[in-house]
Image 1: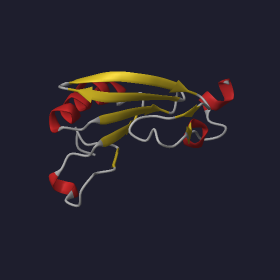
Image 2: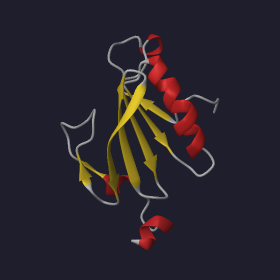
Image 3: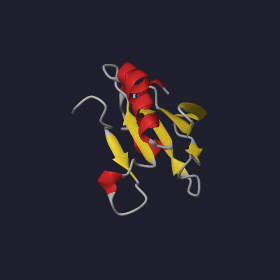
Length: 111
């Protein structure tokens, strides 16, 4: 995948998906890409006008939720394990983090 492209990119308002920045991006972190996702991609997303970003770390069983304010990202919350959360921009619904994790994965076994 080319550098600077989201692993997962969903939820655009409007019908011309390719002419608008998405409102939300979600990066699935891995040990080999975590630094790039944080230091290079997040600033690119902010410059493009993306308003919300999630960083999902399957190794740590964590979800970090960010909102863009100007050119900067503000960390709104960090959720762990099997919490039930309401995370922007989908805070109208409750999400079960346990649905994101592979049962029996190493981090699951450490719980």
